[in-house]
Image (cartoon, rainbow, N blue to C red; front, top):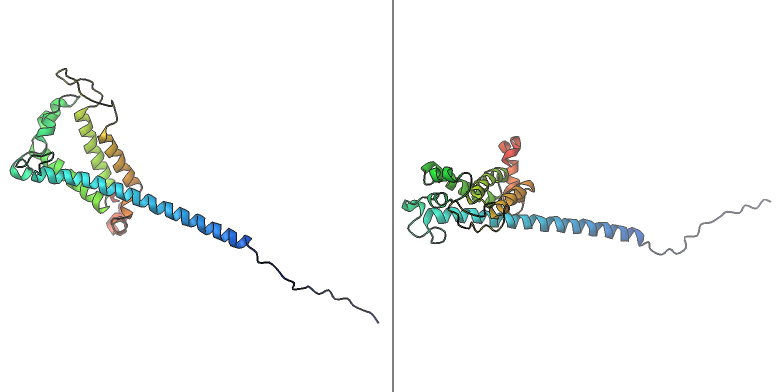
Length: 209
């Protein structure tokens, strides 16, 4: 009689495998860390956007109503004052000195400057149309940079210009900030950027983002 040996696999006792759990846990930690970093970055840019927007909106309000800061009380736009006459009229250096003097106080210059301040400030505060705000704001900052002309060591009358840097000043910093905010879609956090992007006319014209 033939005897057949049947091999039996013993169920035995197996220790739980921690490798799979460790891999899953590591993966989840990495995803969580990336998410936290992305969220922190989004809120950091949103904060920069809101503060920059307040700079433009405050300039508009102060020049309109004369709160006594950059614009003396009673000298606001609504009181008959000119938002551009003081700054453009005092330009004392640079290649556009005479041009700025001719623009100082002109109604078109007042309206364009004030609408620019208000529009850029509102766009930044709401987190919408950041690309338009970046273009308009960069153009405004470039003109103001030319008006102050940091490369000059002396003014037209020969006195010291008091320039502290021949190229980079706060106007360029604002311009770069506006461009960065538009590039990273900083209106998506703490703003209406996502809602704005879903509007049909904005989807069809990405430059309105």
